[in-house]
Image (cartoon, rainbow, N blue to C red; front, side):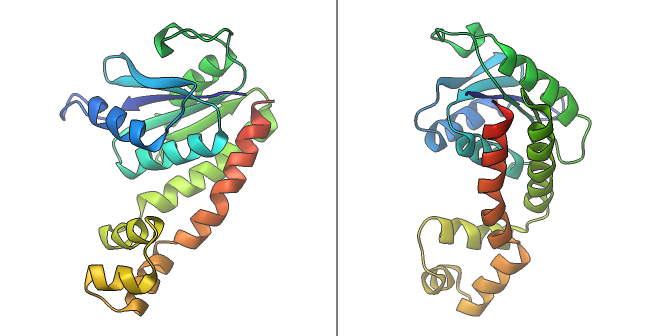
Length: 196
């Protein structure tokens, strides 16, 4: 089942348009979307992903930037899929719009709505918790996370950052990186079940 992300820039009237930057970054992160992320109107864009883990990763990336409201819709889409996201339709798009409307009212700026309501609520709860973790990370925490997630050992990350190996471990611990890593597959599983 597909996963639709509908994303809207927060405070766009007070800042520059960030949509093209986000689309470029998402293109590097998500290699095989069902339908590519594209601007749908103004400062809003959508994409359709086949894998729930990709939806979680995309949401995490957007939430890190602290500039977006993110709605995830889990469920069917009308087939055959058109060439453009703007032309696509189906329940997952309706769910994503509802989720975006909810996300705009929340401090964590993310929400999930799906075909299977109970699983969608569970996915929403865990993803909202992850969003709260991500939003509280320091630049130092992100620097350590980025290096370790890129494949560097703690020792290599420490050398690059000019700190001790223990300091890298402490930054990761304070950032709740391991806990977030452990929870991401749970959100992905719940999203998958929410789409059924």
